[in-house]
Image (tube, rainbow over all chains, first blue to last red; front, side, top):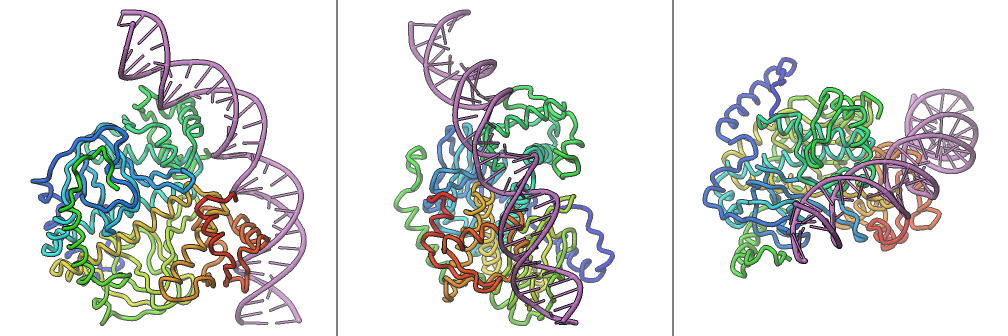
Length: 243
Length: 243
DNA sequence: CGGAACATTGACCCATGTCAAGTGTCGTGG
DNA sequence: CCACGACACTTGACATGGGTCAATGTTCCG
């Protein structure tokens, strides 16, 4: 997450003062996706594939943390077109945000185990505990950055680039968690991937086939992809190569 | 409402308790985009059109509030394709987020006056003041919701729908600030609009012409649009009508 | 008044959507 | 264990929205 490339040479004084404060904060705040102790005595839930955690317009009652499984967050247009705005995989939080009414839907895509913490409780604590409030702020900040990155992807990249970028994101996620970065598990269907990338199933399928044809990837099972050439995929995603 | 497949989740008590807490919070927290007093003794800055506040990779030093003018926040691909991830208009904040390195660029699109508050200072205060931290959280939450809405737009809507949605967003913003909701000022160029909507200048221009042809809008000056039929535009944006 | 930047419009093309088969793959019941 | 049906995925042929290229018009300033 937090990159080590803080040069801090040009802007010497301001930057180093700022860096000092950040180091302090980093010690005080838990890094990564953990809100932490607030989930210690949280209740557990297990929901089946396709069940909704909440839908747009619902009063928000809880924040969830995915223990295992996966969910998708999506919005729909009046005529049914669906945009998945994010996937929540193991370790991710669902439901952060200060609005009291949900502005999107959250649905499990496979059987999913969750920790649930009452929003009322969380906000109550955050009113008293600035560090908790800042951790909530940090968590949201990460979601916002990811959403903007994805907006860049959907707004500017072609189909091949979008798929490559998607695979690279999952690869980097694996890497960050000490897993094999070239074996990707896809708990979601092709339809989900399509709705996430702003494409159709057919296009997603064709792009998978084209990547396979160039042997950049292998499809071990339908939901397990092996990345043969991560560098080439990264290039493709960044628009260096042609699609 | 909460789905039947998550039974007994939202009891009457929990829900109303939550509502009570929210009412309390709404009283305590300033609504809207105001971080508030923290900007009281902030320094002022005025920058010219096309000047950057910061660029991707910079160490973040300040949070800015737009007093007048407008800026765009954008990301670029290796080959120069640009996605504007948001516009910051009068009253908006720029630079929120916990990352210490900027992940996007912020550039004035016209001469812009800004209040600047040191991030170090802001974080320092937020560590002690839970209410401030929660207001930061709220502000980010709004940005995230807007970005997701826009992702839905770019991922699923056609060109006409995107432009209509864009105009409607600005119209609603006017309305929320007590201005005329059918007179839209566009401080940004067609190129900016195109890069925001994930289209080309030509397509944006053609869509404006088509809307004009159907007399849903009039183009008073190049940067001032009059909405003649807000209801029809809203329908178009939501995908009820065909493009 | 002249030039540069911005915007519009038209003709054409291509990437991706649409429609239509066809091919796995998985879970259930016999 | 197999047979079946229901889904999910793949592949091909064709249509089309929006991109590209090019010419022209407009606006804004110096």
